[in-house]
Image (cartoon, rainbow over all chains, first blue to last red):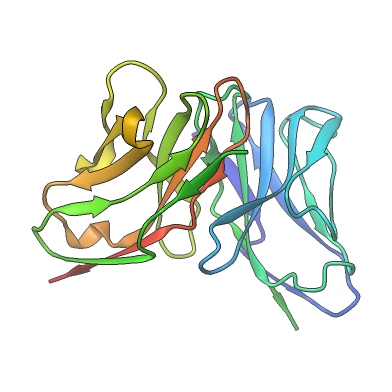
Length: 113
Length: 113
């Protein structure tokens, strides 16, 4: 079945540590996205990529980094510069046109030790 | 920039009662509109979308929504609530030709037996 796989489901970070969240899709979608979800704030866009080897900052990119070396993969690194990383992170993909919906993975919950 | 307002962060209905979740958007051009549902610790699942054509859109699980351009609204309804409808619901909008979605802050639906 086609879909988006995020791993791990739960992740813990120590102070000063970088962690990387995985996102893989087999939908053959060109565009991929990372969102951060906090209670009562909806989804906020961190980074997005419309094509391999290209990505753009979203609304809250500070303290995060991404890469897009393969069409199927869009990993997100939460760096030590992100001072409040505890959140639910969602990855999504779409065919890349505005009238097509985004498809979401099941998320990664990141917590600070 | 686009914005989406979901009136009511929490809505409670009795089982079998009408469900009405409100969504208003700001856009200078007709947008694409989406409703998503999120169950605890899961990603978002598409309920329905409006792109062009008929303004009353039917989705999964008995939900439907009507695009009203004059009111800049896209309210979600279901005639009879079921216990399994308890979840968080997000309205989202994108510009024609654009790739990114703008999400509302969500409405948590509680269904009372």
